[in-house]
Length: 499
Image (cartoon, rainbow, N blue to C red; front, side):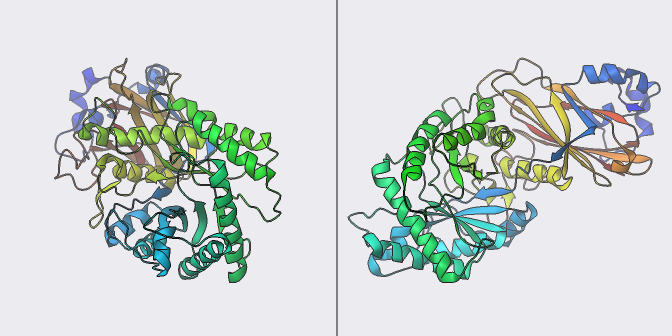
């Protein structure tokens, strides 16, 4: 049996459905059962932009929400943000410790204030360590300046070791140490960067030895997150990998390769083979494949806004852009993709949260809350789109299912600067629905939408929490059609659950 109704015959059937709101929405109307619907299943599927097949499991679902980086421009968050981050079940959170400010010209200050917010660095670390299972520390600002001195040679390595021992002892879930941040963006060459990397891995090794840490909890080391577009990032990485391969020190280590993604915004599909390209770069230098993290990414880098967009448009576009890039990155084999940022003090379009005391979400944060509904259902199921071009522009979908907990389908439009060639109204056809997924003889369809007007606190300050657009109850059926009408950068979630 299929549930599918042409809009022309809806009105006589309205009394047959229990609605979640006073006046049925177009989504609710189109979910009404009708006689003879099963005969139209093939037609409904062929005319649907998104087809979900619950009978085709595809392994573990992508957890888009599982890692984040915080910005030093953020105020110190409150309990509501801790609850938000725990709700997203963070595997790892990235935070910042800046070496020269810790050293403080010889007057060591482990809780020095971040320059852009005044928040104590250790205060921030304490908070984020409590909000995630593991912590990645970007241990940056390792070059002295005329104002900020640093010890040299072995004395510098000793200082690094002592710094690592201090933080790791107090916050044992610190797991990863990143050697700086975007050295290529700072025009560092291997003549200066690789010797610094050597000092770091020696300090990490010494810290692990001093604390008696073994494989299960020892500090791991990563490169300093090379950035730019993929071509330039790989070119810089090649120099680093060549230097690492030539390093004769038997104690050298590179546990995780990290990079940032601010390119390919107009062609995100080109990120679909980035892990393979990184592995090939490693193999070129006789190095094995290792875990790969994207510790920042976005539709634009820095603080220069893309032309032809207002801030309101960028806030609305952000979740669709991030989901699209993350989808291609994860499908390429990248192990962790960190959402940037939890809150940015001057760039709302990069922020998950509008307010870190109340955890009021921007569209980006709301999209991650919707993504959590996918993760809760564990097993990815087939979801195909007929409207994604070779560049990765169009309508994307990811779906998941768990017996007893129903089916979740995350759908979004991403068009960047292009004009959509198809209308925003389309169907999501879900088939092969097992009764065990939704339970009993009745099921509920709930639809959430995030766009320029809905679940968007930036454009509507009254919308401080995520609310559904519609809720509908219906008889169990093996297939159902859900119509959506989405803006060019809207995100939607369709939930099918037990009544």
